[in-house]
Length: 359
Image (cartoon, rainbow, N blue to C red; front, top):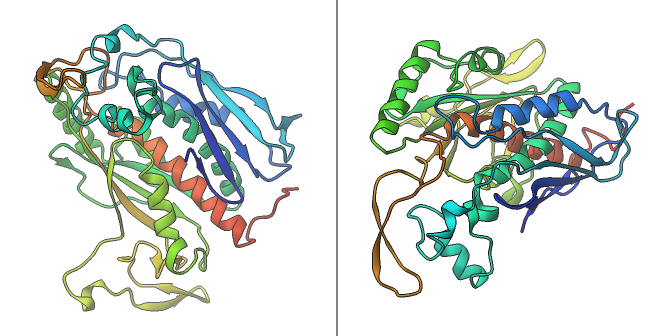
């Protein structure tokens, strides 16, 4: 399915080399003052061509709002938003439509859709489609921020380079935009850039780890068993191409070191530590939500690779051409924040912590 959520619901449409990529958001609280500049700002963080470590594909990703906003506020009707595809070069894919690229969805997509899928640029499986999630997430962020909930992420690790300490959401938001890899650790960021440039010069790519924190989430959000808060967030995160793992908190070797002891702070129950990452038994504890997302190296690399011709069933050598990120981690960061925001708003609305109308 190409939809997500129960009360704050979104449906994604469009493909990498089609006319556009867009989203329809149903259930956005009426009366929300929609700041289109903030939505555009999130799109700008995700768009291609923004730095020397990103793909050279040039897309303006200018926000177009088609419905659901009147006189600057959400009307309660579905909000439809899109960005046009302006710089797709499909010729790069015509030559290899029968040669599935290692690490991509080319083979599995053809098996699922009988070859009728749009293979250009990966079609709906492309990272290009995450622009839709970012637009929806930017809306959700605006609602959450009005309730004092802040979400921020940064590059914790790229290749073999890892940050030296932990960061709060405010530190991540403030420091990560000061460098092109979006790491809150300035000294690590410089080494991360060199790691990416080295891989690119070798015709290769590198992956990494994104760390995300959500502060201000009240205790008691989430459902037992099959709709746990961490499980719902993980489901949304795994919808992001290149995500291969999600971990909440940190697991210690012994229970004595892993358990978060309860204390009272300012008249409220809190925890001395946060090894659980803000979730106990799938329900928010009131501590900051904290998790890491493992991002695989970009599959499209300049090196020659082995594949199979799907028509002849003979092995061939493939050399992928086109414009690709040597590391996708910096552009995944706003998508991780968006996916988290969408799920949190949906869960808070289900728990009746946020109503259908904002006055």
